[in-house]
Amino acid sequence: HGLTVQILFTAAKAPSYEEAPGQLTGCKAWMYDVQDDPPPPLTDQGAVTISGLTGGTLDCRFQGNGYVCPAHSGTGEASVTPGTTGTAAYVLRGAALSADDVGRYLRVNGAATAANNGAFPIVAVESSETAIVANPRAAEEAFVADHVVLAGAGPVPNNPIDPIASGDEVVVGIEPGGAMAFELPDLGPIAAGGEFQLDAASQSILGAVPLDGAPMTLGCAGEGGSCGAAQGTLVRITSTDGDVEGASPFAMPPPRGKQVEIQCVTLGGDGSITVPAEAMKLLQEAHQASAITRIRTAFMREGVASATNPEPQPRNTAHVLAGHGILGFASP
Image (tube, rainbow, N blue to C red; front, side, top):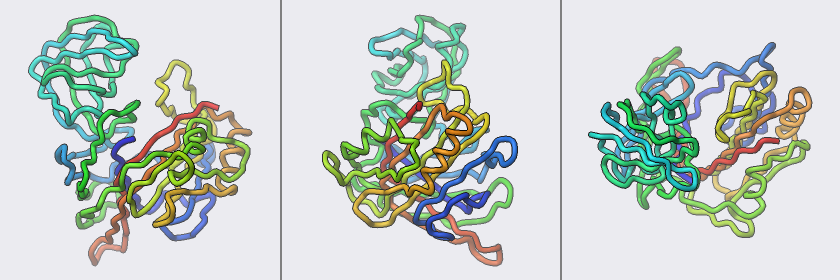
């Protein structure tokens, strides 16, 4: 349950199913075939700045497989001490860690022990030089490390910190870049979607998405749930049939045969979204053709802003959705 910022441009490929053609709202779904109709490559759409958060401004850039937001970095003596419950203490001499880094990721290189290198969720900060991270394979070691603290690098299990303070209003700026770039004014300020609690039925579905082709409802309005204030609700579902053996439980390896993407947006409403059978059947068909190994499902409550680029450029509209989100991972 943490910060989510979505920037929606015109899709690179037409959807296989579209509930409300040409509209932001409704459900859209794409089924890709790696050989005949592969997923569009991830591309650089320019530098993104996210401001208005109590923890400070985030400057985000494209790095090969998506956007990351470096907060600060350094090089120096380091040590790793395994802890309890799958955690480890990373001491980084000369670092400038703070409470704002809880919920971000620590990426480390330079260790002789391979398991000590990588990017790990920060679950606590004990001092300006000591971070507690989730790394169950960590081993005791001292070494010289390059490190960087990243926002937006991935999910943080049981995130103890809410990165959105009450009253935060998010402003998103996009510096044109990449192919077919166009200028946009800053989007915002956006009243970030409030925190929420998924209802009991949705909590059970999030980690066990059905593959029977029946409609699926996710929300915070049912029994056991609560919905903070938000302009809209968003669900994103991604599947892969790639090899997940030995990978992180959050890893989404590239597909080998089929991949399905589903995006559903509702403005207003009661905090629930029903993914229609037409979209869910694409998951069913993909699974029958090439067994799905992992499904990532995101449920988000968002504030919304839209902007269109100035003339004389061809008309392009971008939508920004900012607020709280939760991720679930299922391995059928």
